[in-house]
Image 1 (cartoon, rainbow, N blue to C red):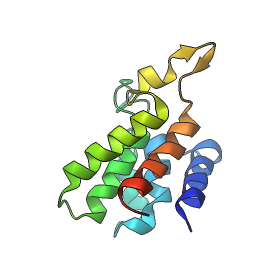
Image 2: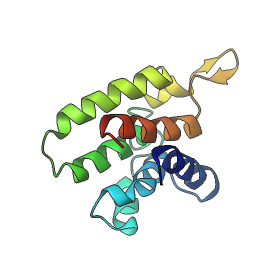
Image 3: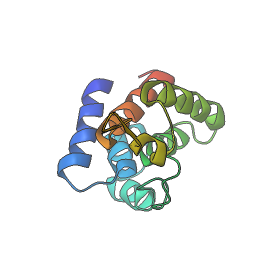
Length: 129
């Protein structure tokens, strides 16, 4: 599966299968880890609505960084995370859930499904998928 197909899968998980943004991204990228789907879902369970419903860091972005940490085995993960955050922000206009959901001309700056898609694409760009 290429990164665009993985991004589409993440959106489908979010929109139609009850996954939160973090879980959708982490689960769609599961093949990048040594973790099970169940483990990824458990890890991502509290990172919805902006990190535990605080409207803080976007859960989609957190999911991508979790997978990067697993893939890199914690080595140089901070640099990869920073690059993903910057890429995501360029694509979405923000990294904070509250800002992403803020209305611009009556629409959110970046709807959740686009955040999910863009987090996977940012992961792919930074991790060279």
